[in-house]
Image (cartoon, rainbow, N blue to C red; front, side, top):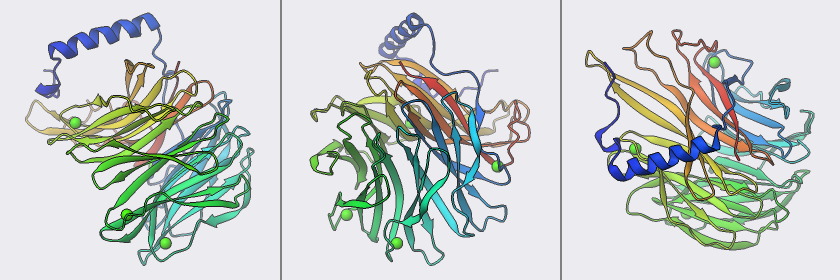
Length: 424
Ligand SMILES: [Ca+2]
Ligand SMILES: [Ca+2]
Ligand SMILES: [Ca+2]
Ligand SMILES: [Ca+2]
């Protein structure tokens, strides 16, 4: 018996049915779904939990994936990195970015066109303090300089996001918690050698919590950057020139529903796509809208609205073609024949045309759970995505493996896996 996991409101209504057929035709005429075959295993050290990846790509297709590795005793975690060539194969050994015995978490990474990259993360101290740190690497994987703390303060800085221009100038944005009812977004702009060029107070409302910022930077000559964040229960965007001049502040969405965890992708001309979580009253959905290079807002549209939680969306734009890719986590509950509920999650990778048509929709990181149908399983979580100068992208995610997986993933507990594709 087929599990009845499609909630009734997601069964195709006539209008949706029509749209689906149109999308199928478009996909068929296009001939190839863009994901390359096969899932790659990113981490070499597999003991215990590896989770929460981020990735970055150079214009020529070189890339790097970073993640958090929790030690076996669960008493600390470190940040690791793995470089890849433009042929998508690993280059060099896994790099241990931090090695402190404490907790480094929430890694983020950017890569310039020379292949040099910068990793940033949150260091969490036992007294509750948190700071943002970064390490710069040469294109050959050698550490450049030393690990640097953005600013050592008694407050909690967290949720870092980094982006660099094609020449390696980088911006790190993060949330700074000032009280239980007030957080602000800051951004530090650095030269490619790690010198502070500017400190941006992106938000400074003393009565509003602004959190979970994400920065995207154009790899075009304008080198503009966008910082998107959650403000109260809405999504806001601040747009900056290469030199950190505020271009505009935009409200991306202020629906009466709760909205959270935004992501932003930007192309070489400064056009952008925003995606975020939207709570529809019963579950989280994913919504999106475009922002033109002249700051005109496109219509908001639905990326996914299953009757279960879709969370943690991440988006990148093709640098020149106007298309984009969204990856997100989709939680599922399947009712088994015996009545037990089967809980799991999977990663959805969805490609869009320049006119917001869905070109393809691919599930990644799935379990084949037939061998163990009654056990609750988690599956794939927390995707990250980056794209190179011609549309090659890497979508990485955390997988909580189970010994009965088919195929076996050979990574005890959580590990980092990825799918790659080429967005036209
Ligand atoms: Ca593992
Ligand atoms: Ca601090
Ligand atoms: Ca504030
Ligand atoms: Ca939903």
